[in-house]
Length: 262
Image 1 (spheres, rainbow, N blue to C red):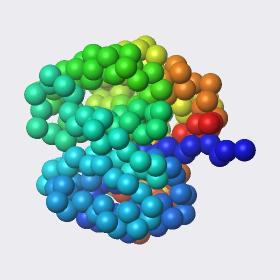
Image 2: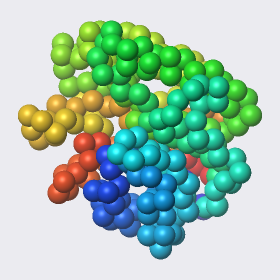
Image 3: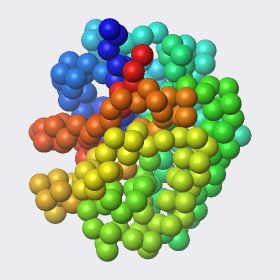
């Protein structure tokens, strides 16, 4: 019997620093497809040769110092299918990468942080999410077997924050408008794979480096793997791998994974 396809997302917070972690994790977990965010590398410096030695093909869209996204796959990537920005939305930041792998459409997102509620960067985040919604609506029509994953910089509900009194409507990542924008995406026919299998709160994918955030489990679940209606019944598992967050000089994010039956 064929094994499920394992698809992961991981904000590595700089491949300059975290490439050894990525290599070790790929050897350990052997996922089939991986979406990376915050690679923080210009394309000429992306380590595609090192990843190819591990059996992964790569497509990537990066910039120096900030942002940057990549998709790794054990199977061929249809490079002609790649989209590297939200069509029609003028933005030089490298935050979006979509590619077709077999019969799956993979959309990798590094959603805008937004800085603080009420700022111009917050308004930009909401505009970006509106544009994303309209584009994904079209993508789903063309590619019904879709996985949309990445660092969403939004905690879906109060189960996904360590303290709802701290992370409330006045807080970035949990404000009413941000959560409403995420629900609009879900209403297109997307499903939070983690919540298809787990109802409990207190499980997170990001912890602040400050104030011993990881040790005290002061985290948020903001790294999501969304599956389309056509893949919902094939979603046989979802998890967050906390182990890399315990390694030396870790990313502040842990990988989130979804398993799809053949």
